[in-house]
Length: 120
Image 1 (tube, rainbow, N blue to C red):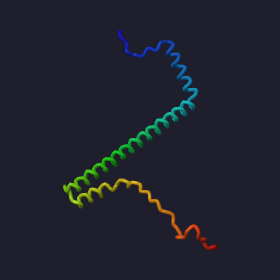
Image 2: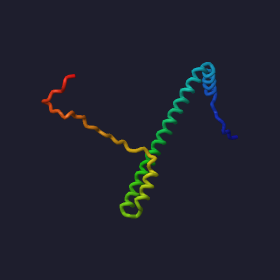
Image 3: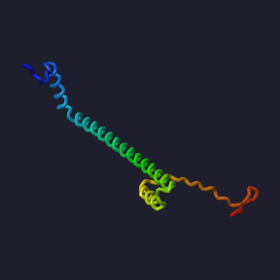
Image 4: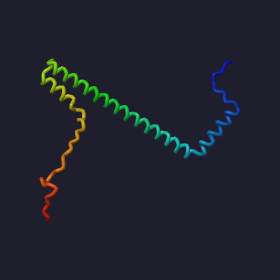
């Protein structure tokens, strides 16, 4: 007769009994370890989901820029009107604008280096 069950043997049963006994005696440590492992898995899963969402956002922004360039090309060819292009451009304005850096020149007083500033 063929059996599909698990065959641990005498040694396997003894090892299993020891592991269960240790788990019962050391239940606070086992519980703490299970909580830490669960927290690690949860944080890792959350990080992966955030990365996937960021990649999807980056792809969507890239697609929007590509489509906007295509509409600009159609406008340049005369296939669409300026109003149609502006409407499409406005529909893509939901994406955050590119960062623009403005550098202001330092203010000058109009004095040359030989002139003395008034003492206050």
